[in-house]
Amino acid sequence: MDADTQRLVEKAGLRFEADGLPRTAGRILGYLMLSSEPKSLDDIAAELRVSKAGVSTNTRLLERSGGVVREIRPGDRRDYLRIAEDLHIRMLDHWLAHLREITRLLHAAQQERLPEDEVVQERFETLSLFFDHMLEEIEGASERWMRDHERERAAVVSLASKS
Image (cartoon, rainbow, N blue to C red; front, top):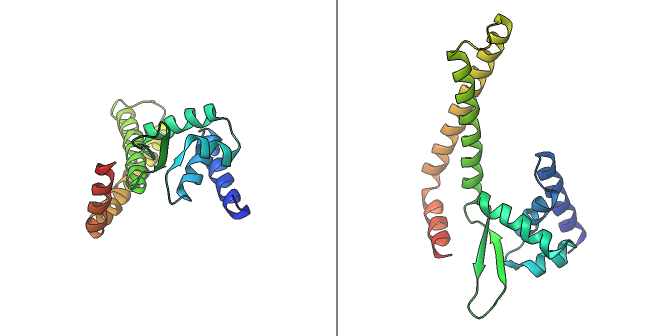
C-alpha cells in the first residue's frame, strides 16, 4: 500500500474511532473503498497489518451495518469483501433513522412537559425545532437525490441483487 493510500486508510480509522466505533473497522472500510476488487480476509489482514481475527470481527460489524458485502466464489474457501454499491444510500438511511429517533425523543419529552423547568423546556423546544428542521431538509435532499439519480440507483440495486 502506498503512502497516500495508507494515510487515507488511517484517517478513515480515526474518523470511525471519533464516532465511538473500532478504528480497525474504519481502516477496513477505508481500504475497501480504495479497492476496485473484493479482498479476502487474508489480503485485508496483511495490508492493514492486523490479525485475521480482528479483520473477521470488524468486517462482521461492517456487514451488519450494510457497508460491506461478503462474496463467496465457487471453488474458493475464502470469503471476499467489498464496499456495498449503495453505501451512500445506506449511510443516508442510517443518518435519517438517527435523526428521526432524536426527534421522537424530543417530541415525547415535550408532550409530557418533561422536564418542568421553563429554561429546560425552552432548551427542548429549541432542540426540537432544530432537529425537525434538519430532518425535513435532509429528507428533502434524499428525495431529490433519489429522483435525480433514479437511473444510477436502479443500476446499483441491480448490481446489489446479483451479489
